[in-house]
Image (cartoon, rainbow, N blue to C red; front, side, top):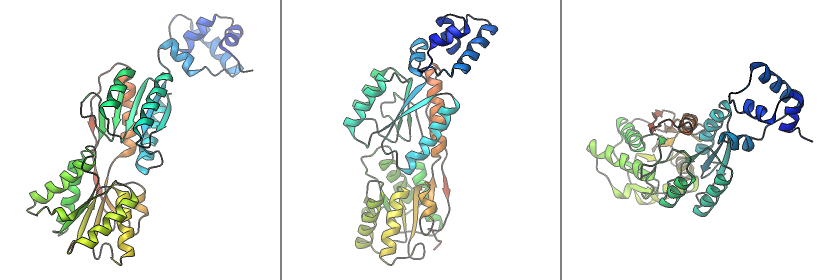
Length: 332
């Protein structure tokens, strides 16, 4: 049988309440008593139940993370940052893979309530009014990573997507490209779709270039969508020399279609992506792209959540992005 807190108290010759105070770093015991309790815990191999301890201190040291696709490279990098920061601060994480399914998300929020999590992180998923109201009901701190809350109720950590897209487009312009297309996310997506599209259009206008609607096609950020969008661009447009693609996965799909169509990158057409996931290094040729600091987003997001749990004020943060030059853009 696993040792219990009563076994620890008996071995240390103290009360259960004293053992509980030691475990929860509460006052009311001597240094000698603390030493006896810790030695008893070590000898017995006692592992206190995190939930039980949390009920005493009103904290479980458990945090919830809502994430749309845990297998996605963006999500995995963010999760690495979250888990590293949690581990270093003696917290555990419950990961909820929502699949962008609203009903599943609501069920997970009920699960996190039952688990008495101390706080919640929402990753890369736009908050609907229903989600936001549910999170408010849970009465725990919430931090958003790589997404926003239009109501302004919850702090967020992300890059400035519009500015990053502007700079990606201007980078192509600086290389001499004038007829630049875009493979965009959905314009209804206020987190990444619309801001990146706005940045692309703004860069063209401010550099004296026309915005051609036939040069813009819409996808869903994933590989197959990139393939299909590239096919549409190649079939319907002439003279395009460069393409800004709103995600690395779609850019990989675009590269695949270009290869199958006998179009050389960057000799015939230049491509720049967005994200700088590991995939950008794996494509042929390696993808020039906008780099987001995903690991840092996750790490900083977790640290901000812990700060909020302690009752301290936290503010939204915009992290820097950079353009990583590889081999898919040439000067014309």
